[in-house]
Image 1 (spheres, helix red, strand yellow):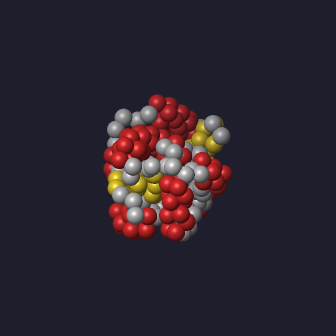
Image 2 (image 1 turned 90 degrees about the horizontal axis):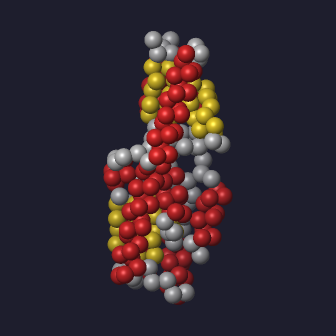
Length: 225
């Protein structure tokens, strides 16, 4: 009688096509990229974010003891959501995301200024949509003269047990999706906005674009000084 589609942009476009053919559809946003407009968080994002932060914490132990520059590549396709929040939570010296153009010389200068102030290690978080951290690491090693290591976290960010936050959010979103269908409403996406679960027209969601919180991006720059 109805279909609840759980997924990201590709799944939602399939849901949209079915809806236009008369199928009662409600969409639930679930992607680690957190790139779906109309919701503050998507299912899976918090779990992936915590996986990335845990890895950065472990890498910093090695970076500190060996006095190295580390580049950590995180997932997110064309979205820098994981990189931005993981970088802030992990205390990264620089965060590179596809939404904000960056100048390599400025990043190198920041690392070198940190060394002059007594910082013996640095971590740069790189969103996969920006560039290959492996190739970027080679360039930064040459420019800084520092011993440099690269870690690509890859698909470990997409697996594992969900965090408590993701489990609770999934329960809330799933319940609201069923409520909408029981109310005879279809063609919607459920989403979390300012702590409340709401419903948005699916067509409008797919016409929109998720943007980066510039306040958070600016805060990351301040904290990295």
